[in-house]
Image (cartoon, rainbow, N blue to C red; front, side, top):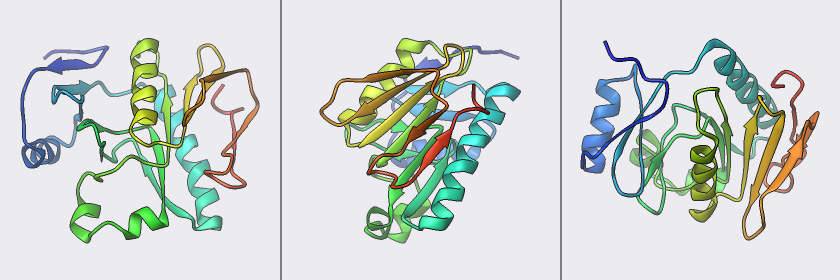
Length: 191
């Protein structure tokens, strides 16, 4: 058995349909593809990271249950970005308008768009520069607001369209701004 502590990249060219089938045949593994089509096998997270991610999803879901402004996705939700990459943010959100513009077939597969909002939660096995590149890719492909949460440093890097990255040190909360109106993420359980 091979154990990976970092993502494994393979130069394996698959069609969108083949990639979708691969992901569904191997549901116990997490796959992504970069813009060049290289297959990336993501290692599972440890218990602490998984628990933190569950808290992120919970808070986002509670807000959306009240506001009913869109759809929330966990790290299993795949997005086919405009640059051709298949990515799965740790938590993400799309507006109801975007959701309703998709066909049922599109909703059942990897969504052919960038989410409006994306969170990446850095785990101990992640290389910070790799996650930062992923955040930049999200913004370059249409994500309006993104947060890279780094529990080790107690920092949140905030990514916005056409703005420089902002780094918040040890924030207790962070606002969803106009992308997620009235949403405030409580970071006390994350840090």
